[in-house]
Image (cartoon, rainbow, N blue to C red; front, side, top):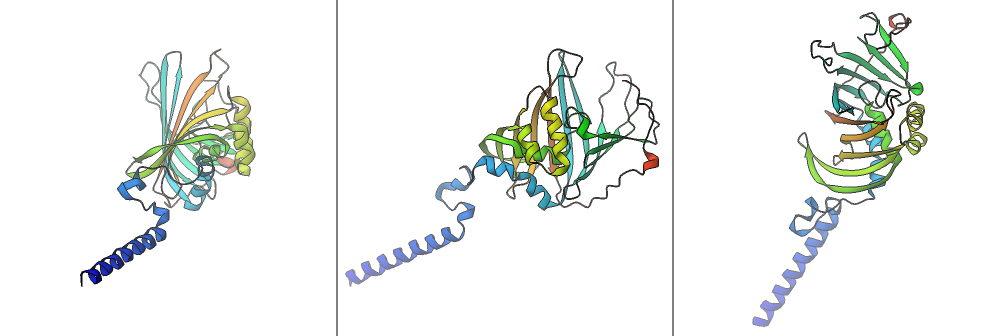
Length: 282
């Protein structure tokens, strides 16, 4: 009798073990393991390959809202320019409202600049510098020495994503949260020349110009991806010479993406609404 009970007990234990193996096999992608390892261990996949796929994940998402921050440190002074808007990753169109800091004396509150981001072009309204308030200024981003990663006071969200196509090295830092979303934090270095070669047609010229215009083509970054591989936050650190100083200017550009799939309706200006006159030096 006792022997039959022992045999029954062994069969039950064996059945539990088999069931556990089937469960883990069915949910291997979720990291089935004891002790909560799925929340602590590094994710599967080479970080470099994962980051190079991030721009494609944004295209799959379609669109999002965006917040931007551009911090410049020069001569002991730190200036921060902030922006907010939305972006369509399939049409490569975006709209941002960029808020400039007050003038050095703190007396003048500057009107926000409305920016439209399009393939190969940046449109700005309320640009100042002698441009009528109801007119747009158009800039060919392929001619800018920074590829519009800095000039507009905000980094084009899709250009920021495609810069990761040039990732040379990257490491997984850990898991955390960004604006309530669970994310994986990576840190690495991208090469602008490599990014330009791998980028979509609309970003090849701007990123190529940035590779030549910055003090170095190597760009350190921190990026946070959600479980679908979409960028939730990315921070690049650029270095460039502005022509007025011998020392390079350090620029940190941060882009926060959220509300994926939001409706977008970005319309570019008509030809008659674009300013054709001379822009004053500021």
